[in-house]
Image (cartoon, rainbow, N blue to C red):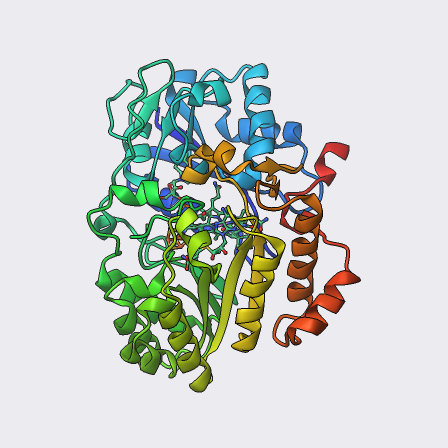
Length: 446
Ligand code: B12
Ligand SMILES: C[S@@+](CC[C@H](N)C(=O)[O-])C[C@H]1O[C@@H](n2cnc3c(N)ncnc32)[C@H](O)[C@@H]1O
Ligand code: SF4
């Protein structure tokens, strides 16, 4: 009898999102290459209406039914937005007598230190890092194999990341697993990981094992051609820093050559912007999304984020001069930050007429340096499945609420931010709605 794997993704989705997230599709593409493996997929949005853990459990068990326990694995993706639900679904699956293996992977596992079996006692194996190769190896047999990046529950945890040869990965697009036909919006990648080490961000660990961070250029180009041929209108590139790769300009030129008319959203480091890149970007409908976080050197240093503010300023001036659409993201709640210093960061962006300024509340993400240093900065976390930092040694709760209101005012005025005094005036009248960053709260009612 063929072995079976049920791959489950508890996903955060937006209206325009394709049904299957890219990470899930990339894993499926790799699993489909394993001979005689019966691959099943379940994608459950966690933020659409009421999600009942028992219903999710039934759905998953139906997919796993009809195969002997030593022939079936259920593999769950663990992301921050699905954490609460996952911790309810896993015990339910065991309660209902599933005896096959449970394998977990995804960011919540990748960035976790030792102790995963305390968090998820129902799981048999954990995969840290990019999971395509490791999961395919595990799925072939019930034997306990020694695979770098795989931690078996109960064994000594080496806290290793799985490695993957990005140049050899099958493309979910080119293998037909994901279709671009009739899809207005897609998320797409050309590289993984990040060369920087900001201490609030989770990108550092899985990237650490990559010798090359880029996908094969020939794959990227074939995917570009596919996208351009299908008339996709909106393409969000997931690369942590699109312009960190030497292929960046070549890729943009390919889109232009193929006459791409859709919108391209690219996360970029302002300091890496150069003329050739902007020349290529100018041929397309791009939005350059710059992370800035803070304009203050000391706040930047506290999170290991060195912004060369002069160069950021230059890049913004040039982008504005060329009429290229752009955004800047800030964080509120950073170590050493005060209400006044946050306002200065916002004001700096407003003075540069940045069309869209986003201000995110600081989250202490699992396994980040900032999470480990929480006591040093006196961080106090709020409520919710993804609690923001609401007070610290440098700001109190009322300061945080004022920052959250400014963030709200920025969100309501995207594309046409008013000057600082008017923004503050608007913020004063606004209730902060930090719940817009949280997974569905309705589901417990079901
Ligand atoms: C797209 C995206 C989103 C989308 C939605 C996600 C979706 N459904 O597609 C949106 C825009 C909604 C989003 C929002 C947020 N996001 Co986001 N997002 C991403 C992003 C850019 C891409 C994810 C992706 O597709 N990557 C490409 C694929 C190939 O990688 P992957 O998904 O990690 O999957 C691989 C591995 O994780 C592993 N794996 C995954 N599942 C499984 C399962 C098994 C069984 C195994 C073995 C392995 C495995 O193998 C996969 C293939 O290699 C990542 C950053 C990044 N570049 O990865 C952040 C990221 C996932 N997001 C993150 C965060 C923090 C957020 C926010 C909280 C940000 C905020 N401050 O508000 C919000 C939360 C939701 C909300 N309230 O809006 C964090 C971490 C989250 C976490 N721990 O789960 C990331 C890693 C960014 C970061 N560096 O900090 N996000
Ligand atoms: C996915 S990140 C990528 C940023 C980009 N690589 C950069 O640094 O220029 C997009 C934005 O999310 C926000 N962000 C990332 N990690 C965060 C965290 N732990 N808490 C709050 N916001 C965060 C930051 O504002 C960041 O610029
Ligand atoms: S915030 Fe951006 S630059 Fe910093 S580590 Fe994360 S992805 Fe890299």
